[in-house]
Amino acid sequence: MQERIPWNQYFMLQASILSMRSTCQRLAVGAILVRDQRVIAGGYNGAVSGDDHCIDVGCYMVDSHCQRTIHAEMNAVLQCAKFGIPTNGAEVYVTDFPCLQCTKMLLQAGITKIHYLRNYHNDSYAMQLLQKKKVTVQQVKIDDQYLEDVGQITQEN
Image 1 (cartoon, rainbow, N blue to C red):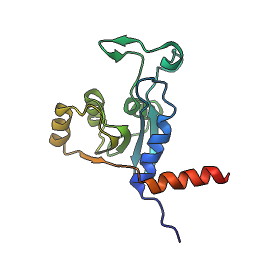
Image 2 (image 1 turned 90 degrees about the vertical axis):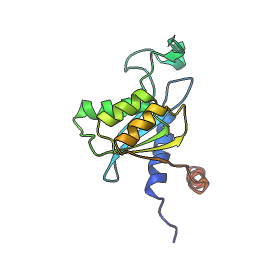
Image 3 (image 1 turned 135 degrees about the vertical axis):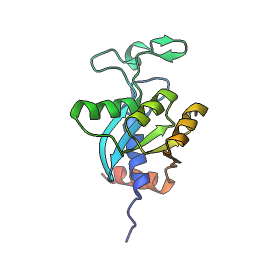
Image 4 (image 1 turned 45 degrees about the horizontal axis):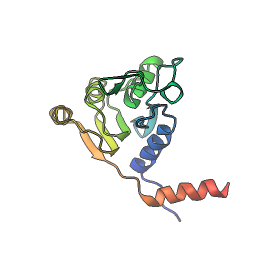
């Protein structure tokens, strides 16, 4: 009998798949908020609903940052706010280490654990804040076995 996929692999794969919805040309990021082993929200980086997307009209750059893009973590937390879902005590699975602004937002939202796939400009002040607030930070690499399993499932259908 085949073993079930571990939770951290399952949620990181979901964040990775969600990143494929990104409309950012510079970096595709996905984030999943989880509480009690259940997904409560997901987000990817892209424009405000109804606005132009970077993939259609290009990035709106100021000081080397795209002003059009809302980060994946923020979109997930805002989805919870929009639908009245509490985030206190939740965990986030995100494809790229959160920027300083997203780290601060996640802390204010009560996120207790940050699971990330790739390092991305890991900010030293963000790391200090995470340590001070005793937030668990864990890098989760997707095991090739599960990528192969997903490939086999899609090829069979």
